[in-house]
Structures are given as structure tokens and as C-alpha cells.
Image (cartoon, rainbow, N blue to C red; front, side, top):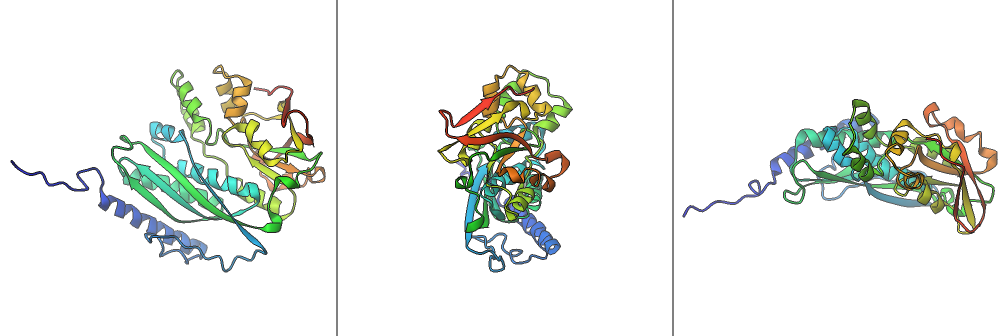
Length: 343
């Protein structure tokens, strides 16, 4: 009987392709270092651990802040529509937008890509988005991991996870203890659905025609708020912030307010986008919309009334913050919604 020689490649893992991908990462990382005059990490790709030089960061009483997240089932639509060059932006956004909630400046980012079969074109496009997200948030991609796992991930399926570290002065940390009675709550518009609620979106798509414009909206990358929020932090213009992700407005704003205070939101002031009006038309109740999607509010800031006009000048026209509520003494409910949202 002829013996069949086993090999890693025959089992479904191609190390040579993985090595080519690592070489590609090293090449583009070096290119980006040359553009930004930051060469400290240019030879670090492929090492067992990633290093980052903090010796030149001049921050008094520095505190490190870290966040990790993924993109969720939005990945499935990227696969369905065969568009992979923006999903990496979403990955970076979900991490760095959490960092800036505490006023931290993102320093570096690491990614984890797991898939059934490594396809160079696909993974290069994913990486392209990650690098763009890092550029927008002014942080450095210093490492990551690509895992080829046949049998765990079926054909074409993949998953993404990200990890980011930021830094902030202890005296500049945004903390819910800074929030006071009568503070205003400002909404900062989202770019679209961002990266939450896609399990419900996918369920709806099963019974609806997908147009070209709808595809574009569904994969529109998450807005990264790093530049604007850090300017507000540096100028002492905000007391606290909230990234509106899973749980929507219902669950995220209250995380940034102390227990002895309540949040009051006027839903009629929320500026919704067409994509949310379309989702609402698919027989989704208002409460379900509010706890599943951002409904047009990607980020919230809690500010002193005297700073209401000052905060607006740091944003482009599309993302100018606007008032949607206020903070009051504690009531029976931690969050109070009044009036109806306009779809």
C-alpha cells in the first residue's frame, strides 16, 4: 500500500503565501515610515513582539489606555459584496474611538486576521484599510498576526480583531465624575451605520433588493473622531464623551454620567440619515432602532453650557455637533427620552 506523505500545505496552510504577506507588510510599513520620518519601527515587522518608542512623548503624569474590538458581522457583507479595502478602517475606528472617550491620544495599533485560506489580494486590501484608519487617527500600525485556519473558517470567511494603545495626562482624563447638573449633551453625526447592528441588517437584506447605492451605504466606513475630540480635550472644552456603538443611544451615554445624575434626550432633535429611515421602514420599532443602531449619532460629548458654541469650530460641516439633551439630578430613570425621533 502506497503511503501518502502528509504536509502542512496539504492540510490547508500555505506558509510561503503567509511569508509573502509579511514581506508586503514590511515593505509598506517602511514606505510609510519614510513619509512620516518615523523609522523606529520600520525593521520590527516579523519580530515576536512589537516595540514603540515613548521617550519623546512629552506628557506630564502619563496614563496608558488600551482598547480592543472587532468589526462584527459587517465582515459578512464585505465578503458578499467582495469589497475589502474599507473594512480595515472600521476595525481601527472601533478601537480608537473608544480610546478618545477617555481623552487618550492613540499611539499604536495591532491587528489580528483569521481566515480559512490566505488570499494575498484580499488580505492586502484589508491591510490597506487598516493603514488608512491608522493614518486618519494618527497612530502607528506596529504589528499583528495573520492566522490561516482551514476547517475553522469555511471558504472565504474571515474575522478581524484590533488592539490599540493610547496615552493621556492624568489631569486630562475624561471621566464621568467631571459631569455636572445642567451640562449639555451634544451629538456628533455618524457617517452611517458604522459597525453595529449588522446581524439585524443582514436579516433584513434576505427579503429586500440590494441596489448599488445600498451596497455603498452598508459598507460606508466608520467615522474616526480622533482629530476633533483630541482638540476639544486639549482645549478643556468637554467633560465626558461616549462612543455610540452596540446598545445605541440607550446604553452608551449613561456609561459616561455618574449615578447621581440622569440623562435627558430630546429624540426630535436627532438628525437621522437615509439609511436609518430605510431600516426603520422594514418594520423595526423605535425602541429597537435606538438600542441597535446609532441612528445618526456616532459620538456624544457632554459639555459645560458656556462651551456650546466653541466646540463646533473644530468640526467639518458634515460632522458639526448639535444639542440633543442635558444632564439633570437623578430621577427614577437613568436615561429619559422625550418626543419622537423623526424618520
